Length: 464
Length: 167
Image (cartoon, rainbow over all chains, first blue to last red; front, side, top):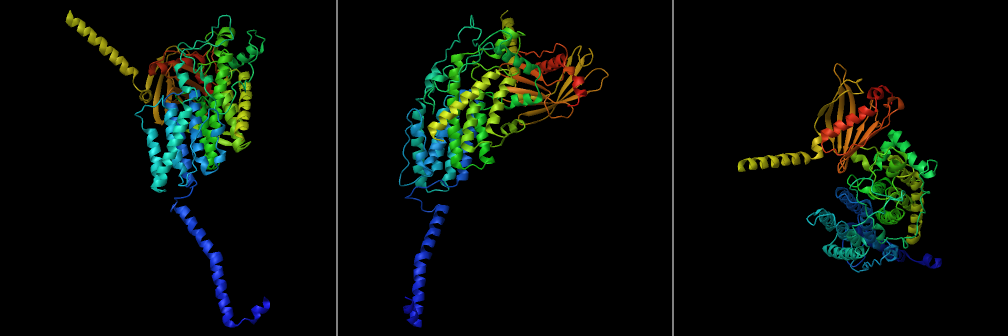
């Protein structure tokens, strides 16, 4: 080979150089050019027909997700929606966001087939391709309307306007054919969701309005409404279908400590502790009470507070669109299931509230907790169960010892609170109910156990 | 006779309409006014009548800022800052003292159930013996609400003592 090269004349060497150049051009330059042009087309939205299009402009997707969540939180607040119902709404919205965009990442990570109640979503493996953010806007619009249908007037156009505004923005990035196809697919997704939502037992429980708590005569441990005119909240919520938990008998959380009116008993001491807190409340405890009050009407309830924490984590931790969507879906479903199991326990155990116990057995007989006692039985504690569940799932998804700042109440002038972990925040939320005089401390501890079990079940089922 | 009945009916209707219009005044409109009143035989001024003025300063979104000015005949005015957080269902009344940000006294008013409860982080020496913060029910009117807050404070804590303390 080397001999041949040496024997070549000048012209031959020139020809050889030209040949090498052609080879160089064809082997290296052409593919590079093709690659650059392809990259340009993908970046600039050129001819995208004929192939599956992944998520373009993720930042806009993150903005849209937060717009949906903010709108939902605002409706839940302004419409005085109850805490259990709020959790259901957030769960469906979060899941709709996630399932709308997951085909752009990895269809195998869809939760649809493993959730309770056979959620059958249309396939997105179409040759034409989609803008999955348009799919999301359309699907979430339909799901949000269904979830809020009993609270929002048909004349209220805010939900439709948000959908229209988002899709109008996407039209600037994609060809009409892709947008129309994406809207169509989003509608099919939304309709599948709505069909599934209508089988979860929510509509049937709306008809069950009559509930009479068991009499406290000969049953001093029993709960009764603590104020004249209080109506028991969602006594049939346990009948709803959970998203993930298959067996509602799981995560039973046991029983409260033995009821007693003896002044040396653990139960009496647990109630007396609240009297002491009430007498000697500190400034920080008052701030904690206010921070975690999460009352319907004032706020989007505890589920909405955690939803807002998730929204803040997106910017604080620079979360990607898919991670954000997964968090809203998984934590939303976990909290919703936690409410079902917690409410089941509440009406089964039917434990007396501290206000009634203290008035009857400790005194004075007009003793009042600082915070208004809510209209449902004491055991287990809703905020503690759902906060523990949220903390456990966020720890699984984002990490242990993740510090964060919660400035959710900045709009009403409350200082942000700093937490070294999600569990620290959950623990504080639980204790706020003890400081406020509406839960016994032992209930908060048992509620943490219930939350831990719910987290384990969700992690196992969703393979997190 | 017929004329008298019509007149009487008209007066009753007008009275009901007036009551309704007062009741329907939006809560936030009531918050931007000043309120004046007197607590007779106050603890704060050693049995003398205590005059109070809730002077509205400004508001920022859901936060309404006031000065609560307390005085008695011949006494120097005592000024206590108050922040009211006006939410949809509740209003939180937060009193701070001595230019410190921490809440010393906090009142929760339920707009739907019309009751008020106040609690405080007050040292033992500033509590009035037999301290018992009562829940006040049936508070429809805002000036009545302000009066109840002042009565509760004066009945349960020695405000001069709180002011003299370093927080």
